[in-house]
Length: 433
Image 1 (cartoon, rainbow, N blue to C red):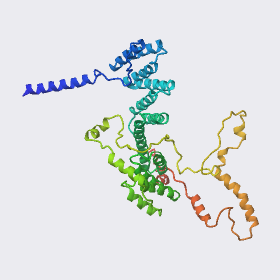
Image 2: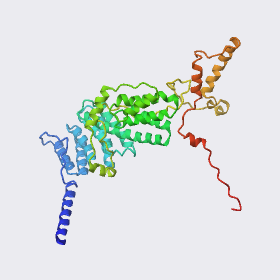
Image 3: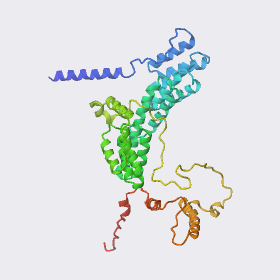
Image 4: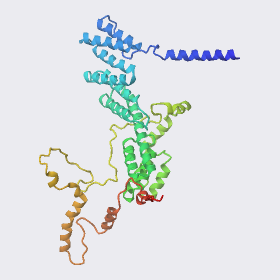
């Protein structure tokens, strides 16, 4: 019995050894872009030798041969192929250093040969360099953001390339990871009670990435955050709930969104037929993770993109920081914000800081009230005694509502209950203690 058990252990060890040997580079991997022309030109011989070394994982030898070709035969018809193969050798070698060198070489190739078909392939390889290095949604987003930019560049520069459909799908998967990261941050702020911060994150998420797999839940959290920020954000809250009903009709949150709209006394929209068909297709074709994938998920470095959308046009703009809705817009700049130019000039007079007035001491609201005061005073002087005075363009019915809106304090990220509770004073220890 013991001899039989030892024999099984040896057989298992031999099988593991054979698997390791087969995966250690002994298996020859064919090069994707060989030169099929049958000729014995010296530059072609050098190219074939370099490709043979690359397929056998002798990358340094292959690069030396390719450099000899490019330096010796600078007018060769295979010069572009050699330059692309040089970048491919770094890409195949892998590693942080190898991928960084490969990206630089691919960018150089696109700069020198922008009209060749291989330029689209080079741009696709640059996208894949960052795509393969993406971290999970709760970690660093640097490679995900870089991959989004590079895949978007491929679709913009080479829209008719054979790599465009695959790059579009990669872009949906990349944006799924970025949106998941924003969703986790918005959920954290919502759970914490920082409603303006949660609304700011979730508003940017839902506007930028409508194809996100959990966009319906994000809109529900967005509407709930706005509803807790006061009555002045009632319409924004209703817009978020209405988007769930209209754009995600198969979502489990539809009935809850309808009830919230009825509570806010806002109309319930009809579902969009195009959105219904898109969501039905996504639910039917969504990839389900297996038992092995779920078990090994925490051990994987890369993110899970199985829930990413399979159709739809991905966002072609980058996610930019937004201004929270609770931040007031100065009256002088209007609703669109500041639209002028900001200039910088050196200060020649060192006494300006002491002699000139400080702009921070006169906020726009105070200036507006000061400008309106003379007009109100002149109107009161001209009006008969006992006549109520109103500002120009203001109706008597609108005065109480405007006053109530202006008097309502803007929401903050701090918990109002904690802010109102005074801190407990520590008892001072007496000398006798």
